[in-house]
Image 1 (tube, one colour):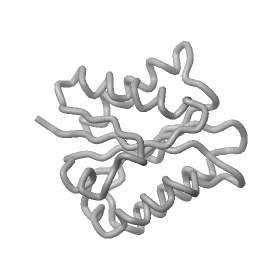
Image 2 (cartoon, rainbow, N blue to C red):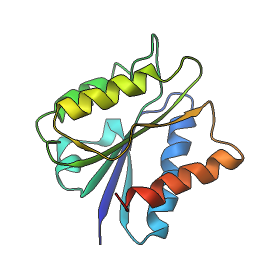
Image 3 (cartoon, rainbow, N blue to C red):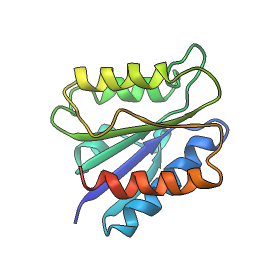
Image 4 (cartoon, one colour):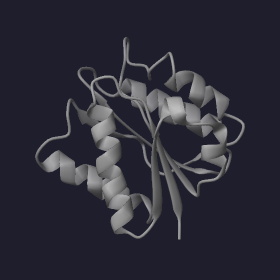
Length: 142
């Protein structure tokens, strides 16, 4: 059974909702899943998982959250080489530059990036909820 750890930061609750919906999709595929706010996570949560999903909303000038998520991502830079990693997050404006930059950063760390970044504008509602679950289901096929 695959172990998937979903580690996220959320300010308005949109990225947290995405994390929980993604977890539903992962569970449907029979994997063990843990959903952790980044404030509760450590590099050991990355090391112990088969797949790590990281979530952050776009902040400021299209960057990941800078007080908790960015330092956490930096702290795992040495332990993601070869690790299966997927990225997700929500945004309110822009074109997804923050996610492209984050994906490039993770590739530079040597992560086996499973996607180009799954992004949702604002809150996951309607059909987007199912898209989040599908992301969780599909990540196990990578």
